[in-house]
Image 1 (cartoon, rainbow, N blue to C red):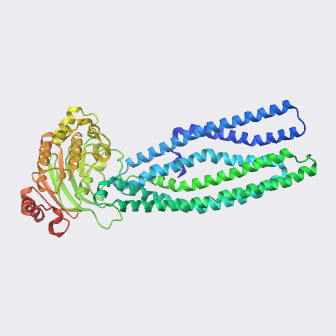
Image 2: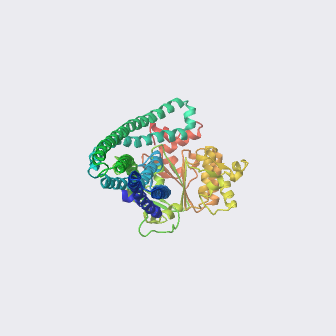
Image 3: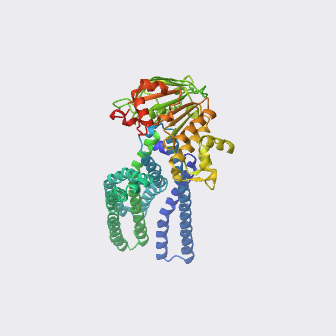
Length: 588
């Protein structure tokens, strides 16, 4: 796990090593200062000349400045290394997420991914900063201080040896007891972020149903649970302070009592005030080092859960990858389903699609109808390999889709979903997702065909109008038409409309379909719809029922052969609209 995470350090190895160098230098200087101070105290007692005292004082000032400089440089390079490491780690996670198939994405909620890329990465960044700075400085200071304590105090330094295990075990017990609460917190962060995301995304629904108080209560529960766990953990960690104080006072008392007795009994020959002063300084250094080590242990253990969650994303193997020798050209928009069955998980009890056999010629217009749950969307998602078939095969342009380069395949298949996304930026920026090199004339032409140009020109800024996050400043029908125009700019071999004209009126729907015939006549067009008027002039209409193909034919053929199609058509044309979910009392 650590090897995988440290792989994100990359170009920040140099500031990391610079930090380590100056931290070691700082630790050496810090442990030498009490030694020189002790000699200065003893020399003053013995009546040294003023020039000697001044020179030693200047040396101490110089060493203090060097220590300060080393600490400052280490702090600068440490912040650069840790922030750069976090940046690379976020980029690596984001790149990995972009390679996920829908099956991979289904394993992680969006709120969980956001938490992993923000809170979890921040925790790991803090740990990395502690590791390359404090986790190096504190052990070195501890070792050097104990050695110097023995040099200065002889057997009296065994007081440190007696206290270190007691303090170390105590701090370890405190940290270990606090860890379960810290681990629980990160899982609850996902629930908190999910509550925020749902509430913000569905703000209109919340207000429409006057559910503000309910949402506030739900958020309050999540926030209180996190607060409770953090409070419990912090209460345990707070025991570090009295434990530290106890050890500090114990060592001070031992050094002052025994040291003073030795100094008096020997007349300052074997033990003197300078040694007592140095031992007190080293005692404080040792105890502070142990305190810092306990903090490091708490932070690293707390962030270990974050490390695991990040590695879950980095270790996730995309279920859909490029073949070893991919094909980079799609001949045409013909589509063939050969014995295709599909289920979303290996452990699923039933197939979402079963025994699908279809032949769609290039340039055909194909309608797909069926009730909710009949797997219409699942069927078309297999074409650009958003999912891979479980059984059978799908051919596009006469080639199995698994043999294509993914970018090539998806670049030739344009999908417009019922709830498609617009991104923050101008209308022009959103349209250029379809073709980043499209000219203004091409943008206007595509928007005219998608019946979007007219409403765009009503905006004061026209095509430079800013689309707010999620497209909240345009209506559902306007958003769908912009998404259709964006897809048209790709000039795809295959165009899939997944109920993407549901928010426009029938006249606009007919005009859009007429635009398809003139603008992309050789493109295979697949239209999923609930309104029969949207597909009745298609070359082929597929009636889906519970993951299977119920009937295939033209509008006239299905009126004679499909009871489902005929009943819905009669209801829709008689003025009392019914869709496929209402036929036969079950989803068709």
